[in-house]
Amino acid sequence: EPEVTQTPSHQVTQMGQEVILRCVPISNHLYFYWYRQILGQKVEFLVSFYNNEISEKSEIFDDQFSVERPDGSNFTLKIRSTKLEDSAMYFCASTGGVQNQPQHFGDGTRLSIL
Amino acid sequence: EDQVTQSPEALRLQEGESSSLNCSYTVSGLRGLFWYRQDPGKGPEFLFTLYSAGEEKEKERLKATLTKKESFLHITAPKPEDSATYLCAVHSGSARQLTFGSGTQLTVLP
Image (cartoon, rainbow over all chains, first blue to last red; front, side):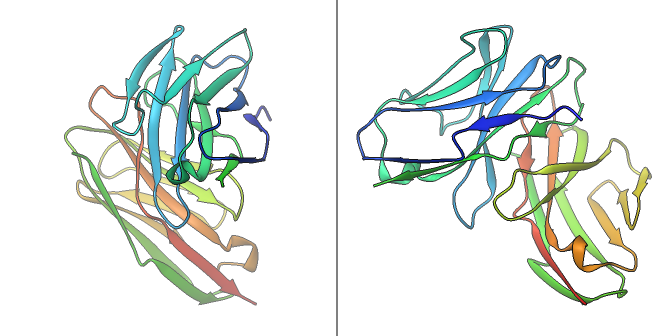
């Protein structure tokens, strides 16, 4: 069964450094998402991406964050200058073109900011 | 603003002891309600989508139902491998983002 893959599984970074989280969505999917889950808290929406542009973003997704689909398979989340409070699990998800289809999630990247 | 509340926060069952998890929601224009299972250190795994009140979906020991204000995930004769956190999420209006509840951590004891 096709799946969403994320790399790395764990990233440790010094505060203030840039980090790039990578995702390979399911191949025929058209909509891509990033969510985060701070330890012990809810899964929170960050951003959605369609047709090479951001379609929605939350208040969390400020100027520190950016997303990119650099080629036909990868989808990345960049955090420019990391803060301690960016420590969380970051999940990538994808879905097909029909609205209300379920989003399929990867297993996440655990980001630890020191 | 969409709100999703799940109860209980944690539930311990003996193997074979059936129970239900609750997800109550407040949204403007429900487009879909989703149930996911999340194992420790893993991403949410899709279980069910429900679109309208009265709808029911079943998969093995799990059955999801939907009313205008809440959804239930019924677990019949659970096994230890059903132990996980069960997440409820809603999709409303024209937005494609999901709003998640805090989840119910289910433990099934052998």
